Amino acid sequence: MLVAGVARADITPPIGIAHGGWGAQTHQGAEGVDMPLYCTVLYVSDEEGTVELAFLDIDEGTVSVKRDRILREAVTAGTGIPESNQRIAYTHTHSGPVTGVSWIVEGAELVEPWLDSIPPKAVEALKEAKANAKKCRVSTASGQCEINVNRRPVTEDGTRYTGRDWDGFVDREVLVTAFDDEDGEPIATIVNYACHPTIMAHENRLITPDYPGVTRKVVEDNVGGICLFLQGAAGNIGPIDGFTGDLAVYRRAGHRLGLEASRIRLGIDPVPRKERLVKIEPSGADLGIYVDDQSGEPDASLSVTFEPVTLPAKELPPPEEVRANFDAAQQRLEEVRSRTDEVEEIKKVAFPAKRAYIANNIAEVFGKGGSVQLPVQVMRIGNTAFVALPVEAFAEIGVEVKKRSAADWTVFGGYSNGYYGYMPMKYAYPEGGYEVTTSPFAPGAAEQAIEACVQAIDAIWQKSL
Image 1 (cartoon, rainbow, N blue to C red):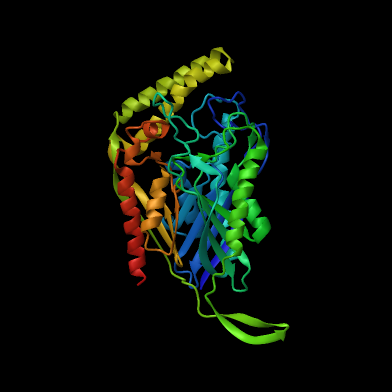
Image 2: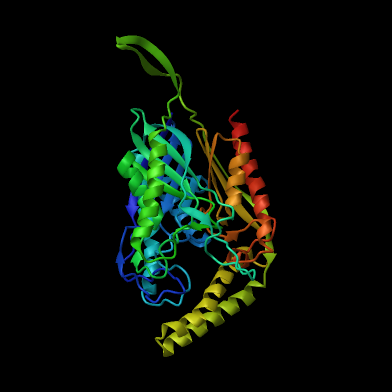
């Protein structure tokens, strides 16, 4: 059998922190909290404790490569869990603190202390999860939920924008993994779904985890235990109802997804069983009385691979040139801020500053481009493969990996183990659009990443034969 424990830390930032970061918003600091932000952790090991895995589900927009490294090192120092065995995932909420350059200045001084507070809280939560860990059985099942849509429509003149493309590719699969103790009581539930948490947008002034927070709560209320949310391949997938300030909209979407996840979860029995007829009871009609005898133990395999793959990247300007452009854009932004409080004027220089910030972050990771080493992580827990890429992967990537996987179940997620930007499919490059223009990857990177993921899954499954 395996061993699992779960815990949660409240990481809700203070009211007044620089919030949202939407170019169209008129407020700056968060004016309140609609739902808390959490770091939810799951500890998994074999009975001997020789292999230990950690899942961290963090309500944050992105976790940069630098911040991922800080958190990973803290977890290893505090718990002994190797860095390669940690899945540091973020829900990608767009209604939390601003963690990059923005026209927003009020509350910006609160961001770094908030980010610094997350690693020690995560470590304490993992210690608690490990201390409370129990023997468990694990299994996965799936369903469907229609709260998402392809988000890359095109106008009649060929302009790509972020909205609803009803004819575009979409993945609506809901994957649910159950962790039950020896008595069949729920320890934890993992829900995996692909959809940008952009329901709450520029009109929203409150801190929220968007729909993933509601989904977790609904599962916990209906099933018990603690729920983690792993964002899927949502690079080109958004909510059907989005870009609003109406809190009821994200609550409704999260409730719908949570009910579907609960339905799936309540139908999962990790114990292999064989039906046996006990007797036929006369009662007007003859009633068949059955019991389902345990016929074995579920797969208790546990392993991980965390290896880099070299992928093609766009040719980029020299990093020093990118940095100079970033410094100049920041200087222009600060100059405008110093002489006016007019939001619209500030936003005019904030947009190029934000793009320069994105370019600078890419340059710090990709250098001059041409190629980049990207970490591919696969965790095997029983009959389920948990695959993670540190990108905003197009939905086709996740679907193809799931389709070709050697595992019975494959839970694919981007938004994990750092952040390297958007990863579009090759077909999307001639189309253009936000995801393509901001992506640091060259055409073909997604297709190579698919192959790397499939090969990593194959390698783990072959070892277990």
